[in-house]
Picture 1: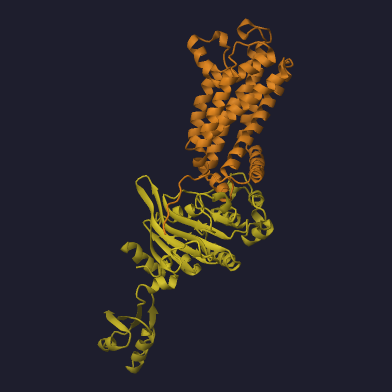
Picture 2: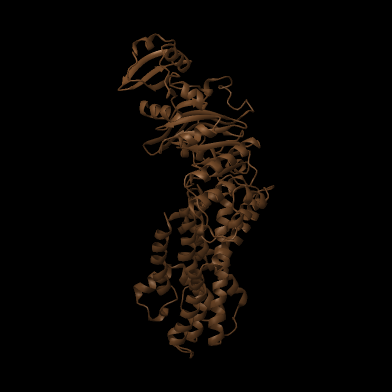
Length: 266
Length: 317
């Protein structure tokens, strides 16, 4: 007798405990490999540290009206915590995810019984660890040189950092699973990152932007993450800070990532 | 012509009833848009067998085995591996099978030892790393990164990873590509040992010699269809079992040879005589030459090979 195979192919969820252990082992291995990549280390450590030191130094350490009355050095150091999350989410993570699929590494894992959930969890864990490390590097480098004050509302800082981290990691996995290969991921990621960096809080202060620039800035998730960080840390900012918008972007990114997960692991 | 078709044998109507069959494929179809890569393929693989899926490039072999592993969705048909539906129970299935994939890689900086340990850690009772490393000659490479391995070394590593979980069925896709002749023969010996230890082996290859030397039974695929299914000997035999006896004698009258038992045709090519026939044609022709007082020093017989049959099958199709 011939039957027709059901085409609704599930990822075949494995036992949750085993899936998490699998994700943890792959993550640990991938992070170890990351430390062996000189280029990646430069991108994670040197680039954000040097950039924040230069930019924060250019505008000085006296409170300025264009910076909502806070010191420009603090404005940039705190803002760059968000910028590095965006760089990891829009460039580093998509390239990593797409290249692992492109080279056949994901297929190799999949053939050994690693489920789609474990694979995505591992990608997410890598993004989270790198995001925390990069944020800490920016704060240590910038805070040490420019004497950044303690946060006004530490709990809100942690909450905004967490929201930004989840948002950009989700965007990174969505981009990585959607892009056909690492070159496309790199191109599209940079295309998204550069304007987001310039108009989303890493470039000129909102006060000096033109009307159209401000309108674009308002829809960029990075503007809201950086706005939230600056408000909760420094107590003043002109940047937008809508948590609901950040969460909405996160939800869309998660939905896209889950939708393209089968293609990624299949 | 199909030499033996197991699909029409007893139990074909109840494909999962026979526990001896670890792979059951019925009328498998795979389409990519308008292209049909696999067109109604049917075969079985029995427990403990060294089974070969043979065909030219683009025959649909790799697509078929990737469906068997749950790595691709079938467009239609019925597939069971170890009693599980690969499409719906893929992760459970992949805990019980091993796979060496044709298109797969590892991160460039991952070392051989790390790869073996990582993949071993994904399974409940893996084989000891040292034992696998010795078996596949990876011991001296344990600290070498994947990017620094030669094609053959990568291939050996992938086979070791396929076997680390003590699989019940292992799929080996183009196993010996990139291996030198010595490495190829060594690999064949180890694959035989894997089968002898009780693991069912599904070997996917376009190398007919490899299939003939290694496999207990083969399925020949061409253009997405099964064109032959049987033992290598039975498929060769399906040519009609004819052999050609050759010898050199420029002065022999060849006409009486036509009356020798088993002889079907006699041709002279200059001093060389070709006698085509079946059964004990060599013995009869030799006896005739001795009786005629003209024993040939270079009397020899040539039988068709699986490669001859493979070429004929793929050209017929």
